[in-house]
Length: 241
Image 1 (cartoon, helix red, strand yellow):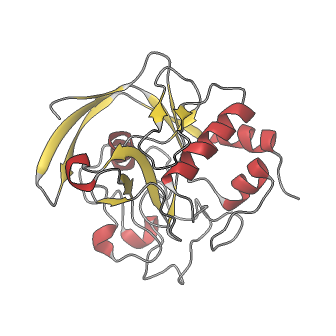
Image 2 (image 1 turned 135 degrees about the horizontal axis):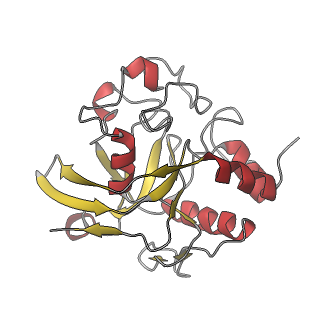
């Protein structure tokens, strides 16, 4: 039996993990640009949004491969924003996003005063992924991640690999995850960041610092998303960018 929207909202609310305030330096390996980010406390879902989550929320099984508890894929960045808003309304929260009618990704805005669900910023994503670990990843690859060498060629059910020190699963491997941020607007225009590596990737992509990008309308079978929420009065402040 498929869960209902309120069931999904309650399940996701229970899965949110409180992330403490902190600081991280992001690095773009291509340009060698570095920039620091101060972070206020926020909450992040322990696992990516699943196919079953979306079926319960929307009443329709999503496209994409995998079992019901595998991450939902074939979702554009704009799809992810719209689904964040849908979940927020279902949960009785104020939606974070205003999405323009032209659907080009350039008119989507984030109301940072809203208390609803949203995508993490890439600084929030990497800070949570590392959970204080300075290495390439937070554990041995086969123990923490589904990747080309062990996935069997498909997304796998979430939370079936070891979590990091803060209890977050699948940040490395299984599917890439959309973030809010533009990748490099001067060079790539509206392209948005995604992080984490996927079920068909080699180890080089499966690192906390690895940045990739795509157009906000693109959909791929190894790209999904994870939910975040701001805490009252909190916001991410970029320093020196």
